[in-house]
Length: 361
Image 1 (tube, rainbow, N blue to C red):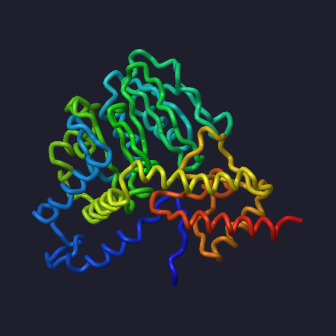
Image 2: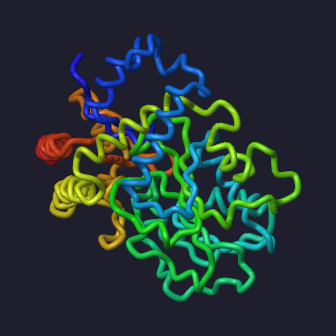
């Protein structure tokens, strides 16, 4: 069967080139006579794999030397707890709530201390990013938290909030490596890799070294202390070895494609094709205010639930899969991550035009 165009929000489409390479190395990785899946994480061969992956990521993002890169398990959802456990010295933090995942992180932080919602866009179903230029951030807040790109609602911070000197923590799960970013503006950047980088099962965290200490909340499990993981170079316990190996291949693919500025251009081109169509369509409408639109996740609706369902079903038959919107919002959503080719978006728009024609009375 031919490969479909996969618009899933995650686990998501991976570069074909990477999948082919992994397939070729499945039984024998570079003459080692074994698959990476079978390899000891303590072996020299695997040590090279994880070190090279880190070096390539540092290169791509120009990560300064005073930041540690950790490859961890537990998904971004576990990190919702790790952030307060490791950072809440004053038991207080500011949260900007721009979607489901920021809200979940905020609720998790409430378990550990006082989490203050300093801005929210829930009043308009998270269809915009609130003005964060002059927020009322408590003086003694340990950090300010954002989810930079909202997978479900399709919004993206184009300007980082003014944290008034406080540490910025950002969940970048669905915009990770989609464009260049200045790591020095953050204390902690983290994201699940299953959207733009690799198979589900890895969280990459980039943490400023002075934030990695033994001074964590009482009761923090050994495994969830950043110091435990940093001191052991992400090898305290058996990491998700194979998934990290695939991430490493994706880093090399991005470098080959021209790095993050080339990725940004590629992503802007795809998003423009889809948003331009949504802006002129009589049937389909985007749900996000123009200035806050994500390049990665594009939610849209027809305004008629039955028509939405018909569209999703027919699209699937035509080879465009996973276009159904998140269960909490309905409608449709096209996630067009790095590995989605321009042609995939062009063909989707062709199909949408055809569907609109056939279903307009």
